[in-house]
Amino acid sequence: MIRTFERYQPVPGGDRAAEARVWWLDGVPVLAGPHPDTPDVTPAPDLDDIAPLVAALGCRLVATDISRRVDGAWRVVEVGDGQVSDRPSTVPPSRLVMPLLHAPSRSGPATAR
Image 1 (cartoon, rainbow, N blue to C red):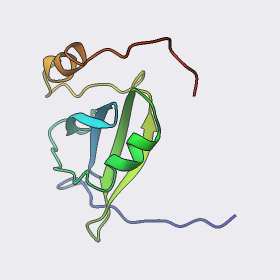
Image 2: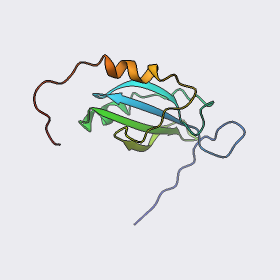
Image 3: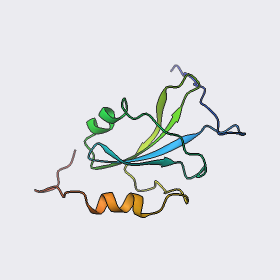
């Protein structure tokens, strides 16, 4: 196995990588905000390259943690189904809940992917 290590931009005044958490519904970002571990650091991620990849997953709800490398490229560092994706304390719950409540429902029986 070959490993590649990448360098990420750190949070201001720290050595931890600055991350953003993005929640997606049907392949569309509904909220992009700070990571809960660094709620006062608010990166502004470029999601253009990531969006088609998330949409290709075919999942209704997806949460991604993304970080910016030192060369400026955004990378997905974690992806999940939103069950353990805590919301940072600096983001009001309504910013995530309202888009989910107003999303059109899918018709027909649920299918396994």
